[in-house]
Image (cartoon, rainbow, N blue to C red):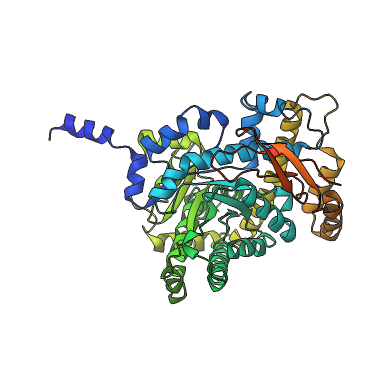
Amino acid sequence: MNPVETLETSKAVNPLKQLQALGQSIWLDYIRRDLLTGGELKRLIEEDGLRGMTSNPAIFEKAIAGSTLYQDFLDSLTNHADLDAKGRYELLAIRDIQDAADLLRPVYQSTNRRDGYVSLEVSPYLANDTKGTIEEARRLWKTVARENVMIKIPGTPEGIPAIRQMLSEGVNINITLLFAQDVYEEVAQTYIAALETFAAGGGDVSRVASVASFFISRIDTLIDSLLNEKIKKETDPARKAKLQSLLGKIAIANGKLTYEAYQKIFSTPRWKALAAKGAQTQRVLWASTSTKNPAYRDVMYVEELIGPDTVDTVPPATLEAFRDHGKPRVSLTEDLAGARKTMSDLAAVGISMKDSTDKLTKDGVKLFADAFDQLLQAVEKNTKRPGARNVGAQSAKLRRLALDWRGRSELAGLARHHRGAARPDRQTERPCRRSKEWRLSTHTPARHGWIESVSRSPGAYLWPTARLS
């Protein structure tokens, strides 16, 4: 083959599809209405081998505030005074999640339930509220009513018991906001324990899926800032060189050692007993993989974290960049001794990885809550209704209490008041948009959202139900 033919053959191979051959699934960290309705998601699945999607409040906020794609839907809710901004957001988000799940269902089926998932996050206000997280995760799982959805729960100390409970009920869970190796290991052991509980109750463990979303670039952003502070003050050339050598190296080293832990955990006799019943490993999902520092290669957090049984969720710009000039190789198992030395060197220069990951987790919860604030404000702003209910003092108080360790008992009381008195004997009727039929439903008002599924058929729309008080 001559050089021209070699070049043309190289161009013809899509690096994104090469990742599949190396055992890594590429997911898209993005959702927007036109992606679903305009055929773009279908094209990404067929041409790029896309195998899943993730979403979060910041993504939905950008989609709503940055386009008019949701205006018709929000206008249709104008006369529903029973819905606050969160209730309207949930209707909108669940419609997108259901439609994305339906488009990804062929992937779900062809990969025998290994891929084809789309994630929906519980309210960030509940990050420090175990009971509230469990209630909301159950409600969202039942409302979306798609077996290829994952409910996203943060790996906070209060989130982990909720994660275990939901997995033990057979709910697919995406554990988000993981930064530390020891927390990852706790999450992986939680998954195994939950599957054992589910299996003991007669559940089919082959139908439960989970990923552990381990954040990457945010680590380098923080650690690099700490290193640069030390570099500015350092006068000794050798010590300065040591500090500089660690820039941009910590996140990848941390990821490699986490993957090493994954391989060990899911090769134990305890795990093999579950695997014999059809259980799938809880894959590590690399999140926050866009390069924040322009001095670094724009696809380095993809190229350096490739290995079997992993997922990488990337934003659109990173997806396009890797398609254009990504260089796939199995990189996760390269130079593990070097990765260990990198982490040891970090400690030696006086930077605590534990302090850093604790800070990143705390900051991550706040960033997601702030994004949720902006999301609800965008929903309120774009709902054309005179005298529309604002996000409200009560919602703001719920947020403050949820983020405040000392406010948990008060939060529980306020949430009970917010839900109102359950009246399961009350019945309401409302239309299903596609079937034009009226359905009769006996229900209890849901936590904070007041929505429920009117059908479990693929593509079914949701209608708001009146809050019972």
